[in-house]
Amino acid sequence: MNCDELRDSYELYALGIAEEPERGEIRAHLERDCPTCVPGVRGARELTTLIGATAPAAEPPARLRKRVLAIAGGGTGPLLKWSRLWIAVAAGALIAAVVFNTRAQHASEELARVQAESAAQTRELARLNEAFAILNQPDARQVVFGGAAPQPPRGRVFLDRTRGVLLLASNLPPAPAGKTYEMWVIPKGGKPVPAGLFQSAADGTALHLLAGPVNVAGTAAVAVTLEVAAGVPQPTSTPIIAAFTEPRP
Ligand SMILES: [Zn+2]
Image (cartoon, rainbow, N blue to C red; front, side, top):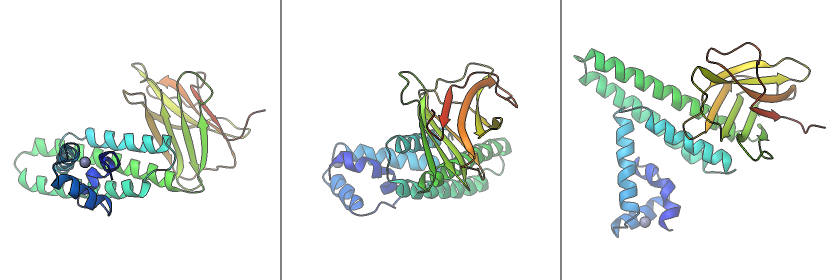
């Protein structure tokens, strides 16, 4: 296997959970001082150590989030492998948090900060795991939006009867100050139902999840509008995203 094919397995290798043939291949590349894999695995080790130390929480989930978006954009992907990685990472963060707690008994302020970061990270990982669970449902309804438009935004909506609605978008510029994106689930012949507020990332990607049962057959569309930061009970602007579950006449 070449370095490009091994790149996605560096983190798994660093965590000691890579499978064959990737594990053996990476080891062989490291043994012959491969100029790509040696720094790659070193970087992966640093990342996993960083996560383990519950250091700045934003970076690892942001990176993992990118993976979900990449997988969703690219169709099939190594979903199960990444699910496993997340579980390992979450477990690592938890262990590290316990160890850190013991050491930091006298630095209560620092401890509170780390706990908050750790909790935020755990929440983000849980959210990403939920997103993965929906992507892994073979019978989840998938709706593509924005394909025909020359400009932003585009992406997919996944509707799963028991797990909820997952929105993955790209080309969605960050909402202006004081504004937020609000998702709506629009029932057939009914008024839009608020489905949560979200922001897009600096790179224009967004992942928003409404967890819980959803009436897939009774849903006409999933839409997104730009609203005031606190959100509104009914949309007040033209949808930026409108994903219709059935072709429109
Ligand atoms: Zn290599």
